[in-house]
Amino acid sequence: MKRAKLFAFGVIVAGLYGALFAFETDVIRLCKQGGWYFLFPVGVAFVFSYFHGGFTGMFWDVLGVQAKKSK
Amino acid sequence: MDASSLNFIDLTVGNVAFLLFVGFVGGMVSGFIGSGGAFVLTPAMMSMGVPGIVAVASNICHKFPKALVAAIKRHKYGHVDLKVGIILGLSAELGMLYGAGVQQGIKTRLGDAGSNLYVSAAFVVVLAIVGTWVLVDALSLYRRGATDQEEKVTRLARWVHNVQWLGPRFYSHGAKAHIPWLVTLPIGFATGMLAATIAVGGFVGVPAMHYVLGLPSMMASATELVIAFIMGLGGTIKFGWGGYVDLRLAMVILAGSLFGVQLGAIGTTYVKPFMVKVVMASIMMLVLVSRAIIIPVYLSELGWIERIADNTAALLKQVSFSVMVAALVVGAVIILGSLIRGMRAHASEQATQAQDICED
Image (tube, rainbow over all chains, first blue to last red; front, top):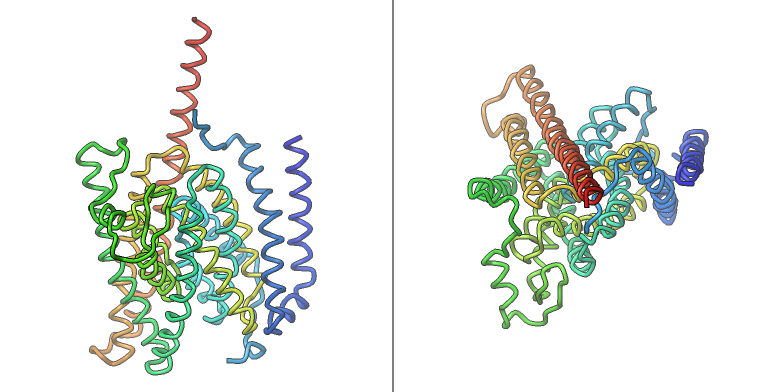
């Protein structure tokens, strides 16, 4: 189950990074607009942090690197 | 400066690999001590040809999601004092705005060399005072053999908890005491101002929360992540409004740093609070050396001392940058070493307990 979730998050993260570079020109154009377009980098950063944060957390977990459980 | 006139660089495989690595190492340090890493990323990006303001903006844009992920993780371990983090974070925003204004003023009057000199001098002064304090404390704990003992609240923090004439106070569950609002203002302001100046507000924020507000060092380092998130979000909005954020750079750094952040945060569950001080002091001292090396170059560029030959200046800049990277790597090696030792000790402890249960 844990591995399946890791895989799903991994695919989503790969898709996000793929899209970021596939639409590089549009990404740069939107970033340079300024003004209310600041919502674009902020929003994208939140989306990446959710999926990539989840992925990296599960990644170390599946590898057996887990936090010490307090008694 | 108009954002449309700025060049957003073409990213090569080499650039991406380097940013992933620095992001990973910086993230590990951030997850462990609450800040760090950012001071290497801005000069690293600039060395790739990224304009200074874009490097600062992209660095800040990777900082807030990183701090968010790390803060949530450390919150799960019970390390975060959310109330203190939010209160300090808000005054840190003011400090950041003021610090950015001071930077701009110096740059207008003295140019790039003046601005660089100001940043380096701020590094040296702050790290010499705070770094020495943290180092002396860590050494004294080590000499007394008190590295395993619970941390004592400093005399200054006890005074802050008991002072009645400083106006309204709020309860901090981290410090397990009431803290006057008035004391938090200069701490938050200084943290923000330092973040705007040297990109690492935590060099003031973490020691201040521990020694002045009386939070355990483990909680101080985790609470700094909340402050970093608030400041990072504010900074990203400010730079994003100007059109200076290169989202590709920010997300590439984030890709590496989130792997590191998770590892650094996990590391905190295996070590004694003493290790936070060791890592912090080691990084601070090395960064201090790095910045001290470069100061004569900026003084020479301003014509305030005799001119330093170009090749000597280039060499000093190279050595300074290498020492900075070394500071980050040393921090990461200590964290990894502590994590591996802690995990091994924990595993053998559990094996012994399992054996005892079987024998019973």
